[in-house]
Image (cartoon, rainbow, N blue to C red; front, side, top):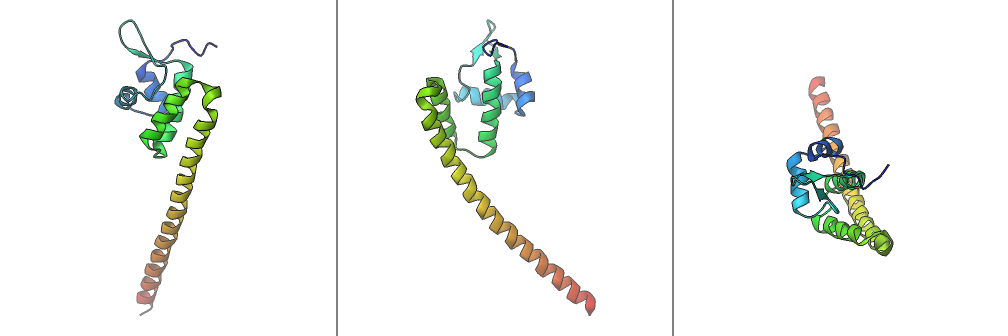
Length: 130
């Protein structure tokens, strides 16, 4: 299968990736979809490689990776794999560390909320016993 053959429309990509068509257009306008082609009519046409990138882009966005970091990754993708693998890894590792910090903070918040629930349950139990 040739990865460079255009085979998906914007509508198809939006369904496959889980983004709205307007989101796909927005990320294209920001230059976050490398090597995206246009048909003779000016419509965006996506290859298999574009589909894979769009799935990755969705994960980056959903994980709240800053757009400046996504832009850097996109620029590195355009430069090619060999020269930029280390730089791309560094960006992703930095984001992973940020996610791990958020995860630790969320765990604290969950424990705090569970404490509230236990307190309220105890208060309810004590009022039922009266």
